[in-house]
Image 1 (tube, rainbow, N blue to C red):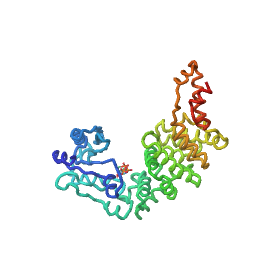
Image 2 (cartoon, helix red, strand yellow; image 1 turned 180 degrees about the vertical axis):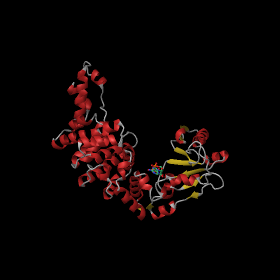
Image 3 (spheres, helix red, strand yellow; image 1 turned 90 degrees about the horizontal axis):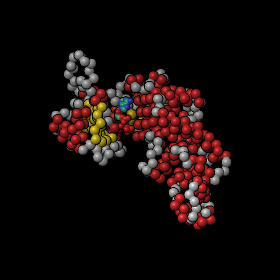
Image 4 (cartoon, rainbow, N blue to C red; image 1 turned 60 degrees about the vertical axis):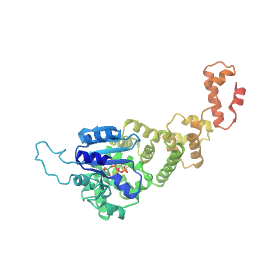
Length: 401
Ligand code: ATP
């Protein structure tokens, strides 16, 4: 359909990048990127109209996003032809805008395109041997200055390598080592490093990526204070497990910031002042900074109490009930005490979700006068249920009353 619109508008359109890569590898990918050799926002507008989608355009960048009624997202970009040329410059004859656009990308596996209009519909366009590299399972940069141009690609290379179980190409690995040695990371805007780290923590297995970062000496160029020892690795592995448990238990019903749990664990152990500086350098949104600090500091404090004292279930419940799920997951993963971990997961999966079968109305029916005492009674009852001290709240209610 989009191809037909392109035909009618007489411009070429291509599906490119990650979607094509994942199509060939056989991995699910719900984000489609389309490049048009023309004006993307006005093209996207026509697509949105015909497919009943919602349109968001960014005129300044000549990009647009269309979200279809079923939630499917399509990003549109313009192949950079004359758009960014300085005013007054001579018009160039641009023979291969698409190729030029793809040449800016990070790795060959991300440079594949499929034409979706005209007689060549469905044709795979492969300027930089991306298909061969997918078959050989190699991550390769497009040119020798790639990591210098943008050092965040160092992180991206390791992320893709771990995700697809690909190796770095020999030359690419050499270039990566040189870039790390030159400490190029220091030149990158902190915010971009943070965003790439967050992408890493959104992956299925961040532990393996951070292991590779350590191998290549990248951790110390992010911050000299980052601790990566056996304890931290075990911590990461358990985070993966408690997150998987949480996803299985709640599906999409709860909005939880999973990557932030890894991020806090990653930074845990860095000293106060250094941590403050790092959080500032990364330009992390304030809300996330608060959450990270809450996990690290409050997490440490809570865990001390939880590990040392033998608390009743209801005491654990009252300690954690107003805290975000991220914090409970963080401490559930941090402790090496298996029994405590299971209790904390019980708290999240059961106690926190539990609704008492009786309400204030039931209390009224017993003849009690409404007042602050109601709250107290209900709380006592809930604590008793959580502690397994009562089976039937109605029977208990009679005695309590
Ligand atoms: P994912 O499956 O993680 O979403 P993706 O390939 O779609 O992978 P994005 O980070 O969404 O990754 O980037 C979209 C495309 O933009 C990539 O395919 C990549 O080619 C390009 N890209 C992103 N970041 C860079 C970068 N730092 N340098 C060059 N190209 C980049």
